[in-house]
Length: 268
Length: 268
Image 1: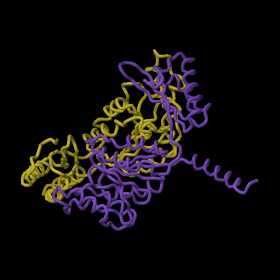
Image 2 (image 1 turned 90 degrees about the horizontal axis):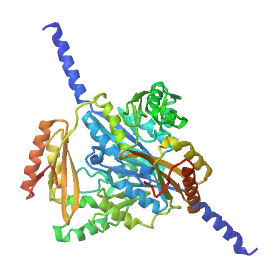
Image 3 (image 1 turned 120 degrees about the horizontal axis):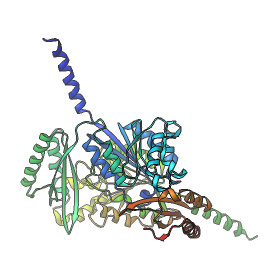
C-alpha cells in the first residue's frame, strides 16, 4: 500500500462525515410590532429559504418584545443550542432599539462604537446633515464584533461569535443575507417535492406513514387545505438526497393512485 | 360606618389591583412547514389581535419542528412562564401530527381517547364512511383535558391546564378562538394610536424618547419605512388608558410639527 492510501481513505471518510453533518440555526425576531399583531413578519420565510441554500436548517424561531431580559434570555439559550443564531430587528437609532445592548449584556461584553461602522455612517450621511448622536447609535456594537455589510441604508449588521444581527426591515435584512451568501459553513441543503391530492388526510394517513417508513432519509409532511368547498392535502417530501427524494415521490404518487386519488405534481 | 362599607372598599381596591394586573400568553407554533419557509404563518397575527381583545398580552412566540423533544421543551418552558399557552398545528390524523403526544409527555400524563371527542367525530363522519383508526387519532387527548369546539371540521381543540391546543389551519384556528371568546380571564386591553411622518428615524429619535418619558403609561414604537424612494416612519403609541393615549398622541403630533414634519394620523 502506498503511504498516502490510508490517509486518503481517512480523509474521504472524514469528508463523508462532514457532509452528513446537519448544521442548524435559530432565528430570534425582536419586536413588539409582531407580538401586537400590527405587523406580519416577513423575515422567517426569507431567512428559512436562504439558510437552506447555505445547507443550514432553521430549527427554531422565537419572537420576543423589545425588552432587555426577554432578548437576553433568548440569546443565551439559542446561541448555545444551535450552530448559528440570527436576530432581526431593534438595531435602528431610536429608544426602542436595544438589541445591541441586550446581546452585549447577555455575552458579558461592553458596548463600543465601531470605527468602521462610524466611517460607513459618516460617508452615508455626509450629504444628509452628518452623523448626529442618534445616528451614531447605529455604530454601537458588542466589543469584538465584525460588521455585516448593508449597501441599502448604511447602518451595518453585526456578527459576534455565532450570532448574526440583522435589520428588521425585510428588504434590508435580505441585503445583509446577500452579503453573507456563501460565507457560512453548512452541509447538504434539503431538497423537497410536493404532491397534492383531493384526498382527506384521514383517508391516506396510514399510507403516508407506511410510505415514509419505506423510504429511509425521506420525511413526509401533510398539509391539509379546505378551499372552495374542496377538501385535500399537499404532501411535502424532504430529503438531502435527490435520488431518494425522486424514488419516494414516485412511490407516493403510485400509492395515491392505488387508493383512487389523482396525484398533482407540484401540489394543489 | 355601615358593616358593608369596609368590605366595599376592600372589594373595590381588589378590583383595581386585578384590573391593573397584566395577563400574559405565549404561542407555540408547531410545524416544519413554517421553519422550511414553505408556508407563511398566519396564526401569530390573528391570535395576537384576539388575545389583546381578551385583555391578554402575547409576550413570546416560538416556532418548533414536528419533533417530540422540541415541542416538549417549549411547552415546559412556556406554560410555566406565562398565564396562558396557546399552540397551533400538529393535531390532525397523520403520522406527523404529534402535538398531543408531545404535550402529554411534557405533562407526565397518559394519552386517552376522549368520549365526547369520539362522539363529535362519529357525528361528523357519519355520512363520510364513519370513524376510521386514523380519524380516531383526532379524539386523543392528554388525560383530564377538556375540549375546544370546532364547528368547522369536527376535530376539536384541547384545553389542558393553562394550555390551549388549536389547529394549524388558520381559519379553523380562528373558529376555535371564536368559541373561546370571553371565556378567559384577562385585564385591560391595550389601545394604540399611530402617527406617520416622512421623517428619518434618526432625526426624531431624541424627541421620541423625550415624548415617551413625558407620558407615563404610554410606550412609543418606531417603525421605519423605505417606499418609492421615500423615507419615513410610523410611530405607534400603546397604552391601557384611553386618556393617556390621547394626550400622548396630541403631544407627539405637536412635537413633530415643531421639528418641521407633517404628522399623518393613522400612519403612512
